[in-house]
Length: 331
Image (cartoon, rainbow, N blue to C red; front, side, top):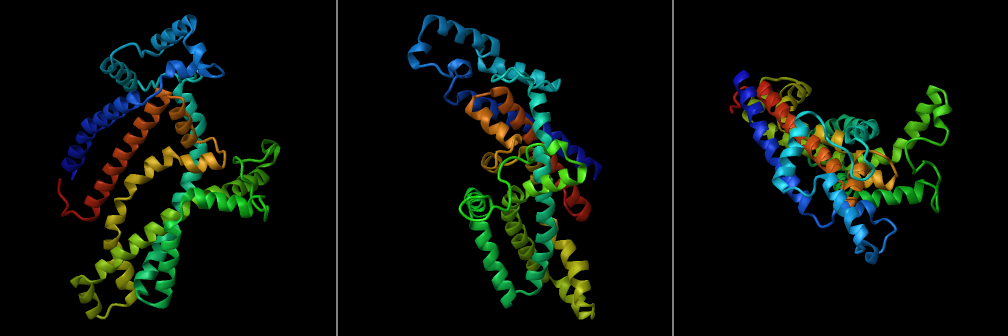
């Protein structure tokens, strides 16, 4: 098992280098020059052709290191990455790591709550549907879950704002940010209530799709395990049905679910671009979106690199957990 772990760990290195290299090349070939975008605000196309402006643009390119060949740019960037230096933003010259630290707590709040709720409700519901397979309750729940899964996130968010966020109907939930104005002056209990009230709509939008998917996934895995011989043997021995389901079936059916652990870490970090944009939440998803619009290469590469690293770590952990559960798995 130790050899398996270190073999998998070793293969993370070339994979990570490959991901960052491909991302770096793609980002730099996207149309739009960061040196131009940095000074373009409020300027016409004729102004950009002015000799003085062209000189400023060229100085910006040298300042950003964009005047060097792309392979040299990647080497210099990767060298800084090894020192945990993501550079400064092209947009406001702020350290990228500082911008990430400011936004990270917001994104973690949203995603930890949503992932916890997804697993809390989807696994029991998946077990219930598998046990009640083909019953009326199973068919109704399945229909409801398919409807949930098919609803686009942006449309659900828009409908919630329209009907529950002070549109033409009810005004039950706030639709902007994560805190009310002056919330920092409230005592802790009132501040917590205010924060939870702001989280209701965005967390629901982040949760319903994953909840519908995972519960269906758990159900299908349990149904597959229920067909196996050792389950029939356990029932033939006269074991109680609850014991068969929760002791034998659930444990073996959750092995594929563990693979989904690989998606949790980048989801915690990456945030949701759509939800953070719609609800005006200053998280990492919105930071990434704004960086792409501004061609802010250091921020884009920092977000992509950290997400790639967390994805690979998630895959490593899920593989290791599968080996612990099923020792038959080999490298």
